[in-house]
Length: 300
Image (tube, rainbow, N blue to C red; front, side):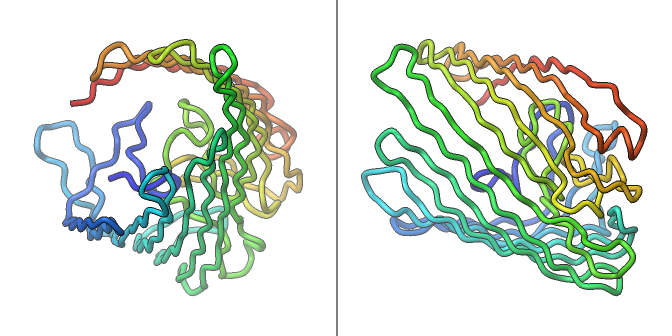
């Protein structure tokens, strides 16, 4: 499944198999609304054929609605509710039964040379014996120079997601990005948005209708110095260990996209990871890394 911007539910293409679901989905469309409702369980991938069972301790349900704001321009409002029930969830604070509800709204569109995509999310529910109170706000903005050679497009992505304030109390403020797109921090999918602040300026060039080049430099901080860093699936990758440094590092990224035919496209992504003082103090890791991610996509 994929909805809206992909900040909460997307295919997550990249180095891992896209997550699949067993369940039901109903769609309704009119000139004024498009609504999708679903009730599912993520499946557990096994090496055989047709043997992937649903995860009975994990449920995911909700609805997603889109309302166009113009019949002639690409402008729309999205509203959604997402429910999540996972029996054994793990955060920097500890593990427990997580039952989480997400309310979100998104506005997106184009106005002349400007394009925008802004979204706000609030989460509530329970974690173990405590309560959940988390939030996230994100915006991507671009400006295109259509009269300049290669039609350069400059952009700025901003993303803020809450982290846990005190691992010693039962309440949890860590945002859960559920099934976030893998492109949040580059195709290598190194870092997820939970308990993170991201600022990323970017530049895109359109060499032709089939060949484009994009580059950006993302800068990352922890929103709460009492919480750790999480991966794209929400797994804890670097615990806080009481370290108060917030700056996590930066990621310069370059990507080349070639639409070879109507159905076939190829892509090459390069990213370099500069780790900052938080990793050095928390897990004594100072090594920076580079990733090259080539892939080919065929769409039916």
